Image (tube, rainbow over all chains, first blue to last red; front, side, top):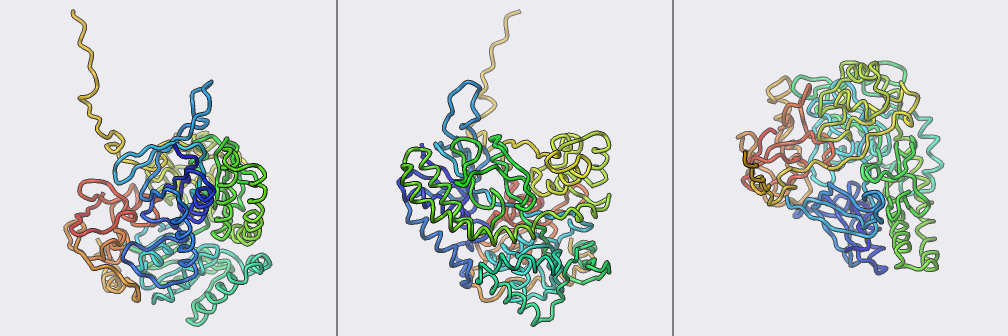
Length: 474
Length: 102
């Protein structure tokens, strides 16, 4: 039995596990990837040596601290099931949390008294005609491809969407030798001007942003502000992208890759599973668990740190992780109230500072309803099940009034991605009809949290093992 | 599959998709749909296929499937390795890996 299980080894999870272990907790950290780092500080595969940069240094520092903390690090673990805590039969006393994972195809189960969730986010990509063409990938996908794999998504690349990732990807592509044919930024120049005061608190980020812009300008890459992708076109794969500019003009660019992202959505499947209280906060990325200042959810001994609790950026995540770890140790009685009060002010102040910049960036990455209204009827929204906007609208006409009903009517969100890819667009389409996302709700959290092969769950079990009672004599 | 318009461009382009200046482990041979390919051992299968110009990984309902999120979320890069469904973006390349459409 562990005192604290931390799920997810991004910046929040690494810091949470480090803090909890250093202060005497028995800690386990579970991560799906082969190495700690999360998406932002994702380590290159073993044997790959990528050039140093600020992100690699930040990631390496967190990894080094974690390695020396005494926390048990379990990478390559895909967590598919959670239980215990409040999920016990009515009338039973609260149980320790149970975590079910799959490690190299074998089932692993462990228990912990407290659970710190650091699930991060997934990328929001609002569908548009041609978004399913090979050659179209996410902005976050492009970052992983460029940073952790050292592979270009294409030779001639168009970068589109919203948020700082847009500039980061464009600059990285350019540096790596790809031709950036254009950048279509959903944000207008006025939006960036409004975000500037919050960015001023982080001169390092501001300098990085200026360097990115300068790099693009030096190659005279067209940067279209307030522009959106109207369509991706091509035969078997992407050949060109049509852009609608701020003035309503259409421009076409030949390219073999499109990197596009419309912001980040907190991953709330685990808190939904535990039936924790959530609230809809568009500026923080969408539905987020209700948290106190020390990252406690509404469920006893359940905590959330990092962007999974609302998008605030990688710089704010480690401080949030430490706050969650300190709260967990205190609630478990490992840390005294007085020690907690002494220890928490520093990460609290650090989080407050970093979150200010993070919040400004999150606002820029928030869902833009105009993108959803622009989805044509025949465009596929749910890729797993092939559900178009027209089919969703038909279900809404037939009376589907919230997300679970839409799922039952159309299978939208019922495929292997479990609604992670289509959920935002689908929920917004429901919201338009029912008067907001609060009414549209969200799909109930269900296990398995990730697809797992049946045979792995069955283990040694064989159908022949089922005891068959002898038939009664006639 | 890449023989559609633009296919020739894709093939020419794919030769140089690996970014120079990164030290990589030695290349090993693997195959996709019977076609022999090479990639550094440990590179993600999704990245290796992309670098080899293989973008279309299968057919979904109503649209083709290709690597999309690269982080194990979207399930669009599902392929079959030795008879089992895996996400190409989470599967490292190993010598002799026989990969096929899901």
